[in-house]
Image 1: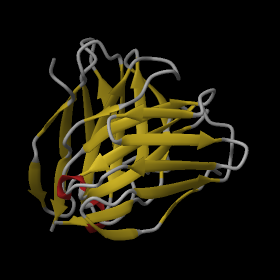
Image 2: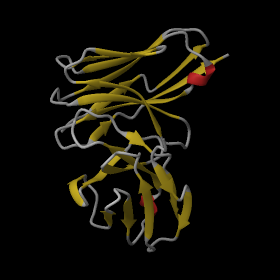
Image 3: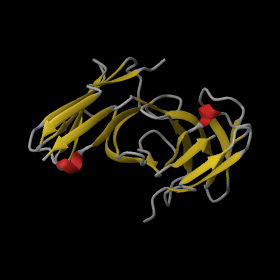
Image 4: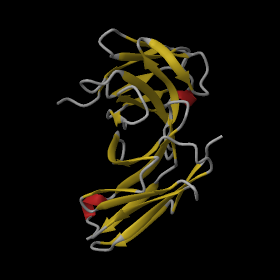
Length: 113
Length: 111
């Protein structure tokens, strides 16, 4: 049973560029959330997708956007990259509802130079 | 606004010791609490999930407790091993369907 799969594992981008990160949820999960983790910090919630709609959003600018596809996979897009966007980006999946835990992927390490 | 604090920030112990990691939170209106482990540069591995109606959960050498009234959770690790060395994060599921994380406790278990 495959867990959460994220791609790519690492990438380096230049300031001002755009980036797309991808996530396949754990089999059977229908809810996907994205988190940003800066070095030495706990993950910060970016947004959550359910039924192909953004359901909740954290305190992140509109440069951060996402999408969920009919097969529940998801993308995170970041435009006009800043140096401060350098972080580990984590995708988490779950079943809809509050009685279930979250399963996290291994993350994508983004470095902006 | 929910705030989560984890104490201590770092802990170094010899192999075989029993240890307790602490997590405190300011708002008791949570759905559940989840403990994770994170190895350097890696993703999060779920250790234990405690529903808001539960008091504790156990898995192997790990035991987690939850006291909503006092805003506290503890993770107890019995007979620690070098392989337990990692950062341990607690996370609360809030009413906005998002996890709020603490900053973690970095654990080093020496042989």
